[in-house]
Image (cartoon, rainbow, N blue to C red; front, top):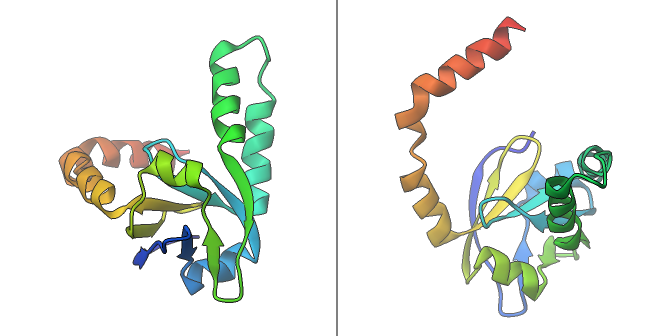
Length: 146
């Protein structure tokens, strides 16, 4: 399970150090893809394959799922860390997530997210989880009943 929040710098070549705690769970090779909130997501090979299989199983006549498949697969790459624990983020993903020098790497349970520091701070202000706690608690309670 990926947990925690880490502040790192993206260098001028687009390289980013992945926190050691995360690297130990990821292994040397994993997938980097576009996230749904203008961040980047990192998945283990196993979780990547599982999710990819699920979205690939939908009917090719389903327009919405075709769009998801295009978004998912075209914006994804397999990456390997170098000796220093860095990955090279391609420019199209840097542009998508609007990454600059300061980034935040967060654990999000089964995956990791990479955010531009400003976007992460903005997201946390807009999506104030505490304001939605009653709704969240009721959803969690439903899951516990199952």
